[in-house]
Length: 261
Ligand code: ADP
Ligand code: MG
Image (cartoon, rainbow, N blue to C red; front, top):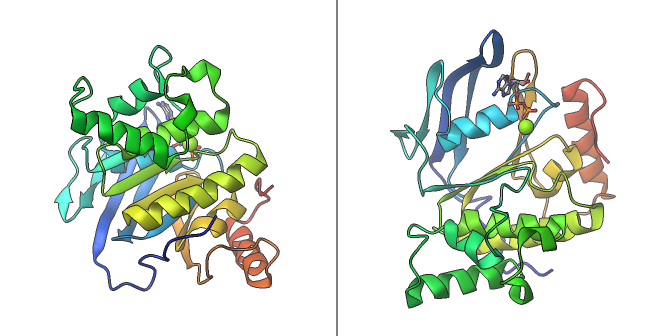
């Protein structure tokens, strides 16, 4: 898929998201310890780390879905105190409403989910079109493939036109070919919307395919280990020497074999 433009990588940008010394535990389990990093406006940031290192916990912290033990998350220098329409979240397991159609699910992401005014209807149609589900507006989630469900999840998250898109292993359950297509489509949407994206994955190839910058997390407890700027043109080729090099460096940093397809 052709990309309309290559956004923001070289743009002079300010911090959009700032995670400052965040710690979070569940009962006796320390999920995140003193995690700090920031994401400049318009950046596509991937967070990689092994299962259980606190990636979902970190994303939920940015979304404002959970209370923190200590530290804070700032968006545009303002502390996050709860969920907001400025941050759209795409969940790993789709989290669609089974009793709503594609249109109904997407509509739910709007500021006014019950409103059927021309503007809201138009916005829903625009989103259906954006994620390529034109013939499936009236389908229910059970009638859709994994890739299509996640398109609905993305459209729902995009509905209020958030400045920040938070994605938690959104393509972990779709087949490799569909995933490749969704990567291209996501980059295309990002180029159009110029959003700041935090995309969580345990898949290093996926991170190097998508990211401006990869944040590597370590486990027990979850911490930020290091970050890598991915200085490659898009679209990227997995067989490209520099691509392979980045993957190897990040795998070394993670220190143990992870699922890299
Ligand atoms: P990841 O997304 O990287 O796999 P998570 O953020 O889901 O990691 O989890 C980090 C750690 O916190 C894991 O050990 C997990 O078992 C634990 N954990 C996550 N959510 C809860 C919860 N609601 N209650 C108890 N422990 C949890
Ligand atoms: Mg997770």
